[in-house]
Image (cartoon, rainbow, N blue to C red):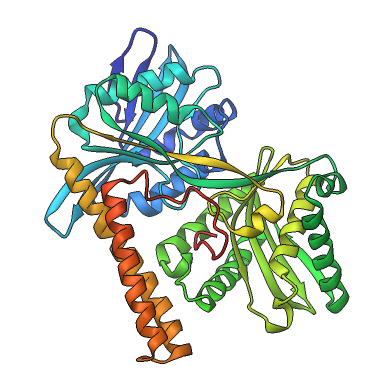
Length: 437
């Protein structure tokens, strides 16, 4: 195991830099997971699979996992990696981030319960001592359900790093009662009636069947069907869909096998008159049903009955039967989540800069602007094609759409670069959808 060791008065830090050493951590990682109040995204299965698909294939990324020991006991894991980020082929900076950044709705460190302060201080000591390793610390989507985001921000600030700490997303979640009837009774009366009305109408007009894929031998068939339906949904709405990136598809084909083996996979489908109508890709972990992604078959005969919402209610009811306490809808503030009595829990970003120079901060902000514009350009092209199909290429509505979207995207991109903490989705959307979900 390739390790670097540093000492503090109460704990020591080791550094894992090689994939083989990462593999050797599996048993210790499982043990610490049981001692930490983290999500399924901090499991060894998710983290190691992410690194295999997105880290080892990236020549600019290097593993840098910090292990915090109290004597012989492992009390903390900060699963970092360091990436040399290049913008326009010229500007570059070194970014330290969590493994799992991107596909994971929550990223975080694993700190043993009751040891969070000691672990955060130990990690901050190490990073302050080794400032040459990074220019930017960019820790996105740390959940408010844990204190780690606040502890790390304060510990790094005390050691002279400068930066900010802000909400970057909201993750709606619904508390589940002991029975489904009690859960429904806790919803607003209008929402409760709407759920029952949709269920009644769908079952009245179609022969409805549900299937939940949980077993390892069914996982590959299930994820292939899900990917197809998810992509169908988003292409129909003028978006590319998560799985347009083949590396994302490969990652999920791998991870569902590992999750099914651990009993964490919950991949639900609804059939109407014998054909697929809607699907939900979920995980069951500890007390939570975590709703990760959705899809549907875009069937015109079923669409008006809201099959996705009916399937979501079915999954919540099944979660209650399994003894789950929370339906976590995770990132994205789509209106349907609040119709199911969801309340927002914020995700936080800790964004810190090496204090020795302002150049990395400037380069980071330029990179944020360029990436934002590129990402938006791809999405806008798909939306423009949909508008052109409906309105015509040189019509007044199409030209107005182009002018409005170019102006808005430029303003949003500049805001993202100038003040990342202000350019985030921190209020529920009343209309529209989020491509994450």
